[in-house]
Amino acid sequence: MSKSRKFAWTWTIKADRVEEYVALHAEPWPEVLEEHARAGIRNYSIFRSGNRFFYCFECDDVERAFAYLAESEACRRWNAVTSEMVEGSFDLNEPEPIRPMEEVFYLQ
Image (cartoon, rainbow, N blue to C red; front, top):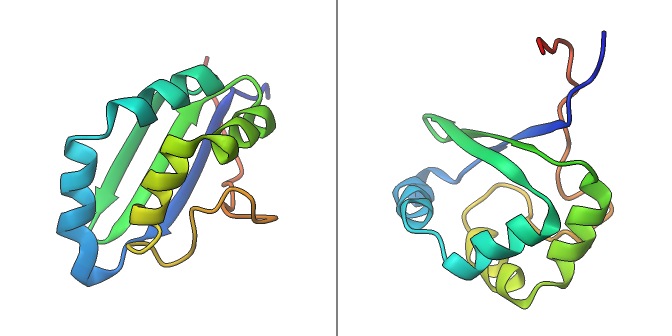
């Protein structure tokens, strides 16, 4: 089976912060979107089930993209806000801030 260039993970949002988290993503900061595009991230989606969120995007070089975003002032400001809402951390300088899910099937 071939692999895609998709990257996915899940996070749980604190129950008392879910609506705030959803509202923030309804009107994301333009500079954060621009930084993600510059990092090579595309086709980014977030899905919700209760307070569990599923994230999926495509990227040719995830390590390079995350290194770029970790240095982005706009993304650090965004992550400072959203990190308060998640059970975990958005700090991309941590050894494993996001635990990727294993892709087990890909239909091209």
